[in-house]
Image (cartoon, rainbow, N blue to C red; front, top):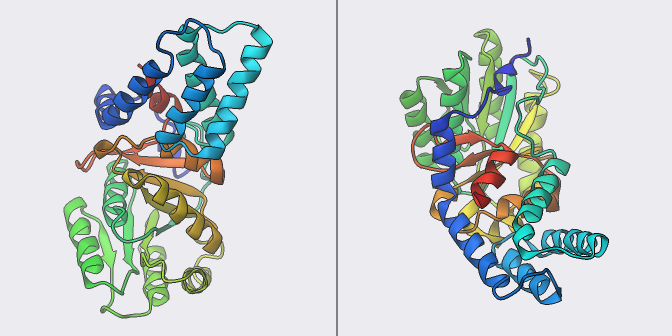
Length: 320
């Protein structure tokens, strides 16, 4: 049994589904009301409806390129069937969004294989203010609750608040934190954390990093150095580079994703703060545009409100 086989979850617990639906409420209300207006007075899907639907998707922060892809697919369906009623549009739209997420490996992770890396090393990246440290704390809580030994590395040494925050989260969820003095070399913190994890036979290492988008070259060099130093302890580390994005920032999240994917090998996304926004469409657009799976979504402030992403549950919560 692989280290992370707990991700092969049984059916979503009712309370988790309820939290998801509540968290996506604003996005759903905005999305469905716009679609209702887009088809008002129409019985069949025609060019006017498609034009209106295009506007709905773009203004819901799905992104232009992803919107055009969805519209093209619906147009192809209309051309094939010769007739598509507006009442069928919601079902078709739901299917196309779910298909897009599947194409980008944004699965439900119930069958996602991590292999048997021990310790499994996650390097977390993202700009300040997106909920990076909170996401790390909530993820540590989730992993510990499954019986895994977790250690956090406070490698964002440029902000005293960042080190203190991660220490507080460590205390709150009951996991160990490796930290050095403010201004220390982040790579040194990462090195110490991995050595410590190996010595203590821990299962998961989560490394925080500085959220500075000063310039792409500087960011690339900084993250590259941390990776190189970690690989002196564990050759293939990090096994996961998790980019945290604030879902409430809409199009800014696309730009941040572009910057970080150009600077390092991001292979998973966590999209936070979806409970306070109507911009949940970014989940669909970012995953499609950058071909990176969404792995976690934040749908509330409680420690349990970081959820493993399930494309079917997500899409159903938007349309039900």
